[in-house]
Image (tube, rainbow, N blue to C red; front, top):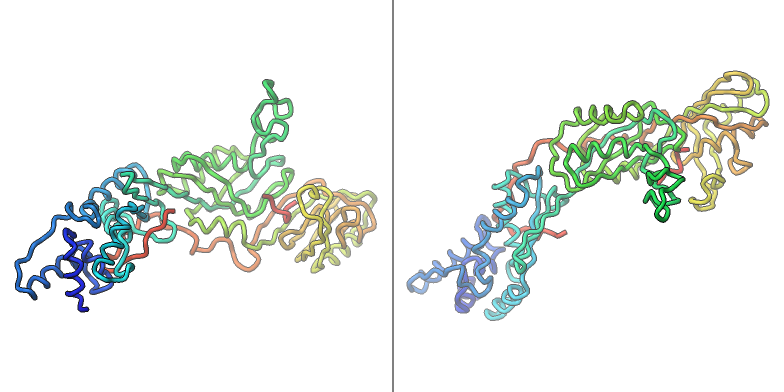
Length: 454
């Protein structure tokens, strides 16, 4: 059959609006809306038959039940729902009423056409409402992970809005010891601050074993500035509670849930965090990032450089220390799960590389050493030997007991590439793209700790 014959067979099931008629032929002739396709087919058929042209009121359409006349209304409702939210990208999804889905099938079957001819009602609704939302809000559609997801529940007559998280990347330095990276709830009261009706003695009723954390000194500031409902800290590994993080700082991402502000001055935010932390923690290099940066920060292979203060059980000669460090440099270290973490790590032997070593004696029983090693290298055990679980070790090579009395992480580096890749950062200006109106679009979808550091 010809396209006009198909259009006549469809139109005979009147009343059918132009949009529903045109939607069956959505894959024909780019540059038209479905409403324009349907109207054009009706005019062409009327001319070909030399019959009077009669338009159809969309409100009377039995296929969409008049919903194709409500694109503007739904777009305005979407815009109103986010009038106090800053965002650059969006996506629209639609829950089609079951009756309309059934009507779509009956409509095509009634004309002898395939049930999937053209495009789905929800695809048109997504696109037509979506391009109007873009114009009303001056934002761009994003079919990946938009800032805002609108879901139009047509049967419930409801617009659902999901404001996706915002992400801020940076590096932190932890300038004091005995500060964990993330909040550490008390295990005696499960973080409640109470045992029964009495304040918990272990945490003094605070609910936390440590009153400060890198997360607690940074994330709340970002959450407040971006006006979010909550914030979560993601670090590139973590150092021990009793270790400082100095030098290059450690990469991190703060995820802010449901932010109402995205266009923030990161230089000012950096100053706000550092003022709030009062010298315990400081951050630098803050950038707005995409959500993929969380996976990058947590998953990118990284090496670390450490500075350790070491105490020996007996006097050590400077030449012997230099020889032992030289032997460790470039060595492959076998480490069976250390005693101090075997309650939370699988019991197995890991091999890790030592890249560089250096050090000097402070006196005959004390030294300061620097070690650059692969991620996952247990530094305290590399020094002590951990009762033979780590081999070789500084203690084993020197033939004396050795213990790390103070540890600092002074460098965190990507093994094969830097953490700071421009592809993962966001511009702070809103886009001005608009949904393409001439092609059917894909429908919118609704949508611990690091052993290396010790």
